[in-house]
Length: 165
Image (cartoon, rainbow, N blue to C red):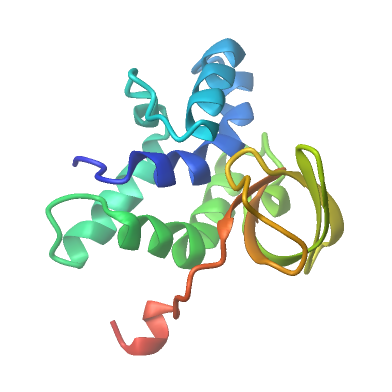
């Protein structure tokens, strides 16, 4: 299924690419190139999102359930914010080669910014996160983080499961 918002998908997916590098699925050089392109708001020419097979499959499933013909920003956020944790739990039972608590997406508030990093307070505590994908973030912003990246400022969303979908 086609991903309409490739940049948003990659902002959420690329932070966990280190696991795929460890598994030999892709080179660190390819990941670094993709991160630089996404950080510059450019979609990579190479279809790098295909390496994220589980996320692609789950997003396609959600899109179909939502009667959509492509994976758009609503589908991407629904997966990473509301359904990703369950997938992480199941994948960790099978693979055991990544840190499941780091792989989850957390909301947090920026305490301090400086250079290419921001200090963010989440339910995990205070930690420095890379701002490459969210350069316009500032102190006080509510953000979403994945591994060691701020993915985006917190969008105004509600859990679709609570809406009865």
